Image (cartoon, rainbow, N blue to C red; front, side, top):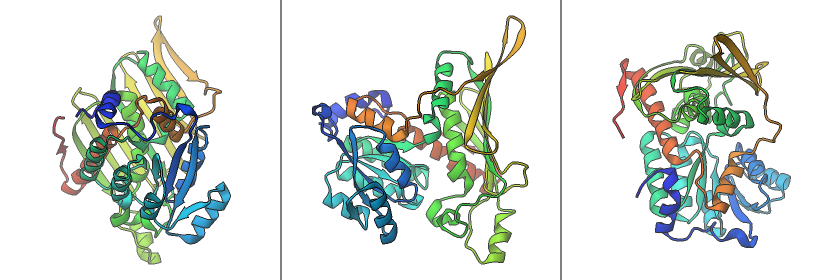
Length: 373
């Protein structure tokens, strides 16, 4: 069975009818959300679509379960994902737990006949991600990863320019997310290797990596060189008695089989001027682009650089006035219409392979070769 997103409809037909087929009669897509930290944003995202109803939520924290249930008017509340899957008839599930649980909960949801939207990173490792992809294919169900930064109206507008050939072929890029001081829940699960699988590289860098790869057309990686550091966070953790065994900064150099290269950087703590710095710069044979956050916040500018009639031209993209539609809205529309969805598990696996290789290279002090697909 092909793993290509474009072959999804043929795969689904071969696997048999999906729970979300035949909804043209007006029945709403029934969704459950597991994990109510970032899961709150998933609830809001699903609710953007008029044919979606979040009917159930699950979280072991009883207080948070009650608070979120009351906030969004969701009466069906469960102390575990297993209880929710056993007690509800769902079309799709959002997995929004610590990274350690992504694989097992995704497998459980697929086994229950649900399509799955999994938070980034897809898993703790490429091996886990591959297991999830294989399970989705075997079940004839969809598996999408929440690479949310590609779904902004601005990123979508940039992608349309890319697809129109404005930039030619991309051959070099740099994609970064640095924070001067921004370790999430210092001492919590984000800083524990056993629960998170890594630090800012797998937390923040995953977004900038996917965005760059998506704009570049997801070229196939050939080899990776990486470094990781904990120069700031480790002493702080030791002094405060906090648990912290991941990096606070990591960087990677990725070489693709088409000859292009990409530099990736991510940090929770670094001696930089900005409180928060996010940018993705890609250089193409016809033009270059830069997407960068404004005023150290979460609004972005997008610029294009080119030559026209012998003159250097800088073009500032105006952010589209259309409201940004979430990854959840996109996934719902794809399920309801039977069309392929974006940010599929295949691309999630490529991201995990690159992240694994950066960490492995940092540990070995040498480049890591990635086999051809």
